[in-house]
Amino acid sequence: MPGKVSDYMTQKLITVAPQIGVREAYFTMRDEEIRHLPVMDGDALVGIISDRQLRRPNWADESPDIEHPYLLSDDLTVGDVMERSVVTCRTYETLSKANKALLSANVGAMPVLDKTDTLVGMLSAVDLLGALQDLLNKEKSQKKQRA
Image (cartoon, rainbow, N blue to C red; front, top):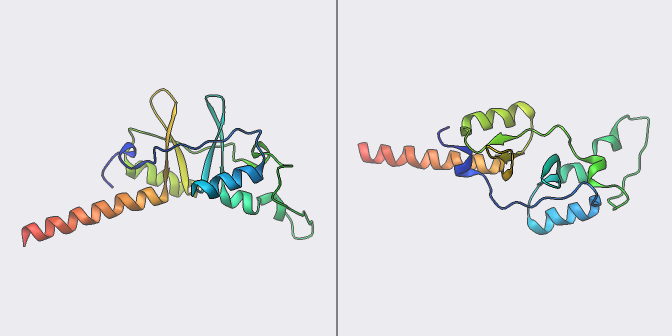
């Protein structure tokens, strides 16, 4: 897939701090129409959280014989449930490399860092579908020109 991450990443950044409640984070995602939130402690990326994690966290179903009631409340913080091993990519990487990273990690989005390790965007599967559509449109246009 041709192109760089910076060509297709979402530059609108909405982040949360690890101290905010999970209910607040969920409604932030809903109101902003996003599914992933980078978690920042000051200028440092310390985690990521998805709407899926907030709707039903993994620990709530860790064993069939152990029941954990789960209510989406601010009693739990983002820091309690966020993914700490964050898969990231760089603005200058190819979309092909970023796509392989998303597939390998089985995640739907990843934070984009610049050369100074500053968070500058997010790259999601939806962004990659946009890149694929551009590629298909370009291919179609070239076929028409040859005909």
